[in-house]
Image (tube, chains in turn yellow, red):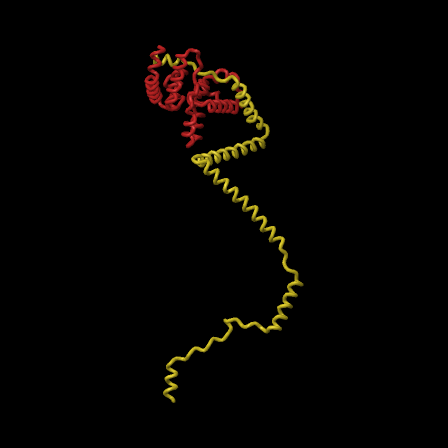
Length: 157
Length: 170
C-alpha cells in the first residue's frame, strides 16, 4: 500500500526518545529477577518455597485487586465505616477488660462471716417469732355454698 | 536450559520502538515504564521465549500489547476513572523548535488521544513500524480486514481533525 501525502506527513513526526535513565534501572531489575528465578534450581526446597511464596503473593494480589474494585466507588465511606469499627473495637476491649478485672478483685465472703450472719438470723427469729406463712400457704376462705342448699334448709324448717 | 539472553542488546535494539508503541497505546508514561520493565523481567526469567520468534521486534511488540491489555483488564471498573485521570496531554512526539511543527505535533497527539486504544495501536504499527496489515493482524490477534478497517477509520478521523493545520504546514 502506498502512503498518501498526509500519511507521509504523519510518518515524519518522530516519537519521543526513551528516557536514558530507564536503561540501567530496567536492566538491573531484569537481571535481579533472572538471578532470583535461576538460583533456586540448585535446591528443590528453595524452589518449592519460592513457588509457595509466589502462590501466596498471587492470591494476596488477587484478593487485593478484588477488594479495591469493590471499595473503589466510595472509598471515603468505606474508610469511615472501617474507622467506626476500629473505635467500637477499641472501646469494647477497653471497657470489657475493666469489668473482668473488677470481677476478679471481688472475693467471696469468709465462712466466719456467713456463720455469724446465720446466727444473727436465728436470734432474730427467736425474738420475733416465725414470719407469717406466705399467702400461698394460707387456707383459702370458704366459699358460700350454693343457694340450692339454703332452699333445702328452709324447706326442712 | 536455554542459553542466557543478551538483555543489553535487546534493550538497545528494541526498547525505543516498544516505548513509542506503549506510550501511544497507554497514553501514560508511568504505565509505559511499568509495562516495559515487566516485559524485560519476563524475558530475563524465561530466556527461551524469544528462541522460537521469527521476528524478535514483532514478538516483543505482541508481548507489549498483551501486557498492556492485561493491565487494562486488571484495572477493570477503575479504568473509567483512570482514563479521566489520564486526560492530561501526554507528549508522545519529540520536541521541536519550529512553532508550526510543534503545533501540528500537539494537535496530532490530541487527535490520537481521541481514538480508542486498539485504533491507536493499528495506526502506530502501520505508520511508525511500517508493518503490513497481515503482520498487524498477527500481532494484535485480529483478522487482517479488521486491522485495515480500523486503520482507515482512524486515519479518516485524523485527516478530518488535522486538515486545517496540515494545509498550513504542507
